[in-house]
Length: 450
Image 1 (cartoon, rainbow, N blue to C red):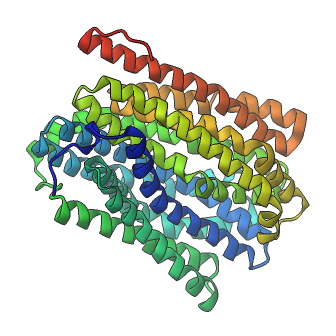
Image 2: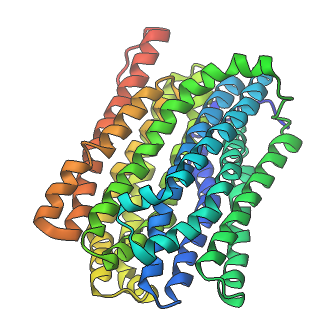
Image 3: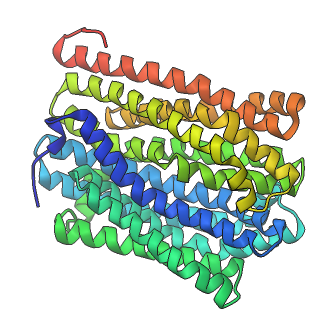
């Protein structure tokens, strides 16, 4: 166990790559298993089942996004305390953030289970497809509480610089899911129900590993107390609540896009469901970048290292651009293989080709938004992240999707969504740069430009 704040010295580029890569391995392992889920289900030969999993995943993404909000608070506060060498307070924040994560997740699960029929209807799920999606959700949703606490503990691990531990927590979930999927889906003949049960055990694995490592290796969890909870809850919620809104904006946007595509039929929904599973696998590094850079920013903010804050933002952009170009080329090159792998029909394959050829490269701007959100959450301005993400999910999505749909049909829905991402990615990155300059001026009077 080390009390040092390891990110206030050494190469920032190296810190960002190491933290993001290790985090991405664990994160992508879970999403890769989700992709395998989709593939296994597609082998059953019924596109309605693929569409059902697509609808269900849209709703589970809501619950996961809310959980990520509380984990952001844990990472931001713990990393800042470690940067200022206050380990006792770091432990109290970590413990109480997990308590709040469990409370919020329980409330979320109850609300979603009670309104499941309505939510699926709003997404456009009907008849047999809606029933299969509901079966999946009833099994998986309660386990979201375990995932919420596990993600919070994993964020605390990242805040200490334990990239390996954070990676292994999510990697354990992916491994469990990968082993159980074929057994439950095919060997026991449980189909979609088997996929759901495997996901429950995966969430349990993430929870068990992250909590045990945070407690036994890092001694990062304190004994819960009412006094400590009252002292910490305001600062935790000041970050967690805006972060929840920030993260809920993305699944809201995806839900709207799903409903817009559903108008064109289940085949297009099946194609979009495959895209939905491809994105986190292919671009998991960008998703992990936002979580990985948080502790780096937090520790340097706590230590008053302003030059390193500015450099971290610039280095992140370089990494985002290089990675996005590489992945986009691979998707373009392998698009036929992807279509054949999932046995997609003409309509589904059309929308997947559009994504692989033109849409994937626009994830550069999603990456800019992710990193900017991490900066806002860790530099004391979580409401900025909320405003930008909500803006992207509403005015950056709805009108663009409507226009795209009118001119180019189902493919235009993706084009419109991408256009909004470009606009808000550029805006968020510009504001993040100005925010760091403002903080530097406030604390040092230094007005050097980036």
